[in-house]
Amino acid sequence: MTQPQKSLFKWGLTFIIPLLVYMAAPRDVSAQLPMYMALASAAVVLWALETIPPVVTAAGLTFAFILVLGMDPELVFAPWSTTLIWIAFGGCLFGEAMRGTGLAKRIALRCLMLVGGSFNALLVGFALAGMLLGLLLPSIFARVVIFCAIGASIVDALGLSPKSRMSSTLVLMSFMAATTPCLLFLHTSETFIWAFEVLFGKGQSPVGFWEYMLQGSLVNVLYIIGSFLCIYVAKGSESLPAPAQLRAVVLRSHEEMGAMRPAEKRLMVLVLLGISAFMLEPFTGINAVFLFAATALLCYVPPLQIQSPEEFNGINILFLIMMTGCIAMGMVGGAVGANKWAVSQVVPFLSELSPTLAVICSYFSGLVVNFILTPLAATAAFTPAFHELGMQMGMNPLPLFYAFNYGLDQYVLPYEMVPFLYIFTTGYVQLAHVVKPLAVRMLVGGGVMLLAVPYWKMIGIL
Image 1 (tube, rainbow, N blue to C red):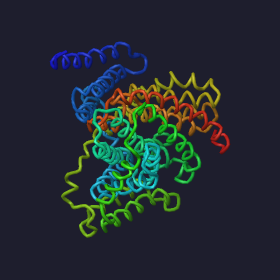
Image 2: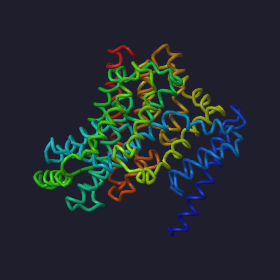
Image 3: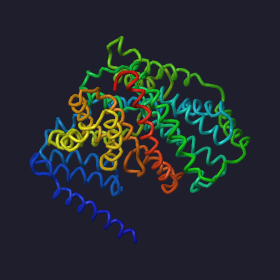
Image 4: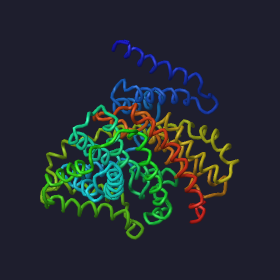
């Protein structure tokens, strides 16, 4: 198929699929729902096929909600007032500073040095580095950029082909290090903090940093272990060079960085101050997200000499438009009745199940929904249903909510998650090499939920 034929095929799908969705959409919910579903499905198809840049699709979707559906601009642009956007902004600033100063690379290399030079040791090193950086940098996308740079540099240093299975494996390992700690701490994912607001309402989340440590951290550690074991599926029968050679690559990279510079030390202090905002929020009453973002801005104050003001101008924050477009999809869906319709389809089924089965089905609901909506749109659209479901079943909605979020973290196709899409732009990953391990991880995630159920019962939230 020639390039013009491929382009024509993509545009054909972009019109045909939304048309079919429009025709099949329920008419008894609201007059706007069929057109909303058509617009949302068109956006998903455009994201999936990458016919136009994803940010352009997101921006166009928000304008279409106003111009085609006649939605109030205050509703469509309400995502800009959510904490998600501003923790992502703060995370991006800290991430760029940690990348620019070399602090993030130093932390990751130090973890790799501690565990040795075999493939198994590399696996453990990336897992430990991911958990540590997850504590320090609550932005998944920023961590993905940092870790993928490290993974690609290891591929180059070892003289591996960027098209090889081992190259894909090492970058997948880097990606797992950045993303699997997404629910390790309350602040490890920008999406997760915002999701709590969707579940309980702004300022009404009963779960603080330390409470979540009890409820979620151990479960996420199990998830991290299971996810990293799936990397062996990507590796197959291939092997790395001798451990001594791999260790030498890591040591050489670390030595080339030299001693820790004053700018790195000052940045580390700022990062710890930003993270302490989440830990101390129950005592201070100050919104941790905005304090974190405000602290990140200090990286560009000239007296601290961490990053120059000129470097701030070079930061690409267009991804915020992508995020707001995805959130707007969920918010507008609620306004036109899509959320209530989804609840009417899901809640009656789940409400008849036992709490244990409801948790497992919540996980698989997130897994399936992620093929249709982006995680942000799915969170905005479906999370309120779990609060309602919990009340109907007379149970705490948190286990249902946690399981759904683990389901949303499952993906095999690039369009399902923006950071996942990013790793393919590096040129070091082949989709055929990573589909199978990610498919296996879906089952692993379900297994982790089965183990989480008795734990949640033991601590009294299920």
